[in-house]
Image (cartoon, rainbow, N blue to C red; front, side, top):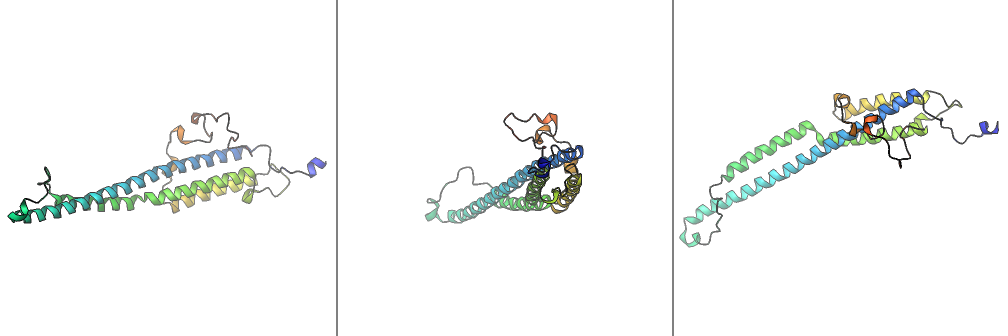
Length: 215
């Protein structure tokens, strides 16, 4: 009787079938969000580096074009013609045209970057993945919104709250991150899922004390 009255551990011995299925769905959404966040992070970094390179190239071409025009002026003056630096193979490069088309290309890249919104999606997905992981841990430890209020450890109240929280999380992520639900529903390679959701993802290591599902 004393053991039943004085209970330090209020966690259930195991999760219900509904809870396990919800955890599987939650970890799956978390891993997909992390995968998409890494993709948009790489895309945003690539676009940024490409913009820097093209702007640098436009600046160099503009400077060389100005120098070539000055050289043409000085060639008309015999006193300065012998002092001009020689640029073999670069005398006939159309620097003005290269700079012009480079500026157009930069404008096009900026427009594509604004359309893709890779940086904003990356940050939204990263924040969403962290929020979902925190939610999963709160459910597994039965704290916060998932706390057991009664003495019945087999109550399905936490599972109901987790299901509603997952629906709200997915809705907020889709609207706040300018994302489409199709990104989460398409097939991903087994290596994407790292929390033992599927057998194809590989077994957990022997030194891994957490199975990502137990209370």
